[in-house]
Image 1: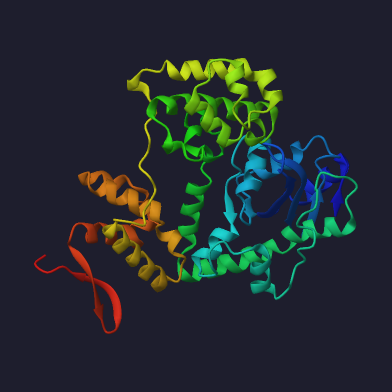
Image 2: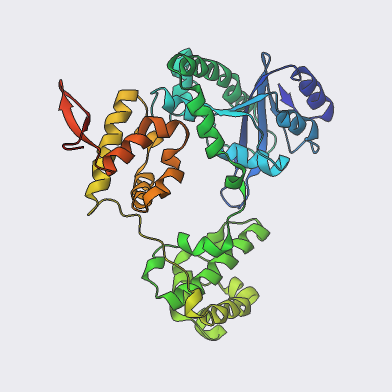
Length: 388
């Protein structure tokens, strides 16, 4: 079904009211905008599957109210961007929810499995990828495009049902539920803090602290402008010229305009504001200079972390889950740092929920020297440390 009127939407919502599980997907375009440009919302349940046209239907309230209902599980596949769209429309994360990509990794289907591969694994059907690069905001849509979009929810339900069955049989459904609460916590959908945008600029570590204060001002302004104009941040000012502005600290429009990559349009419209941001950054006292976080270079001189990462790999093979689900390199690094602060590690994510039982306790014992790794009957595993 392809719905383009308020009446059609109202009928669909009525048909889905007694459904306890909804499969949801969206189609959007985001190549040139900060926010997603929504082209379709697909939903399936009770044997129905439909594509709702948000361009033709201006009032989506009935559908959004359906999504908000706490007695319905909302199912997505790799749903971060879909949920960003729905969060912007609804003003909330539509709980309870389920992500089949996350669940698939928990039962050993592989890390970040594509929807097409998951569908084939469950149904044996090969779904088309022919419309991957469709402009979903252009009208009219072809029948093949609509069918492609609807298939994304039509086949999502059997994938979900298969995964729930496997998760229950392995006793891992609670793992997924806990993981989803963390991944899709409401704070993860808030707009980024402008004060920390300088950390995303390439080569920011090359700047002196004083110049880094300038970069902080300009990078924060760039984000605010991107949100306000609904455009890509790089279309306002790319990282390279922004870094050079922070380094050179131009004092007038001539000096600013001489920096390669500063567009003439931006210079004429916002040149004075950029200069005022430079001046503001230069006036920041040393005590308020940006704090540069430790580099995430985990590959050299980190013997302890390499040792723990090896154990995570072993444990993941035993459990038949992806290693990054247990602990990625960044988490291992921060856990080691927290462990150096006596009991601080007890508040670490690796020492919470299902991860604590599966990996956190072991990592703690290894770091405390109470356990080591050894070989028993041809298998590598934990062994009591000598003298402990």
